[in-house]
Image (cartoon, rainbow, N blue to C red; front, top):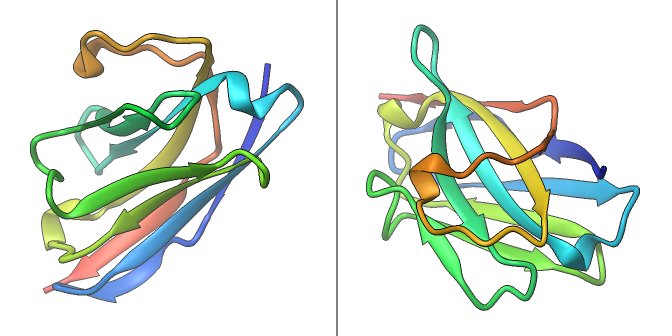
Length: 125
């Protein structure tokens, strides 16, 4: 399995931007489909975005389409989540996730098998 470590979370005002990073180690990063999930207090963990191992295909939750962008740099073993026009409802713990050679047909049903410890994003109104 791959080991994942998120960074870049913090406190931001509504309308602001943040970039989350997820550094991977352990196995060949370029073979992994990578994604981001989030979990707000009292709510279930939800899918946010994913990107295939080649970077050719991306998936987004409807709630973040047009505001968030997922990208990856296979040379740096890192995946990013660029978050713009943040809203208070984006407040959550954000988790990096991975699954080797995974094809995503239903993003809401995608089940990664590697997870990072998470990074907190708080958006103030």
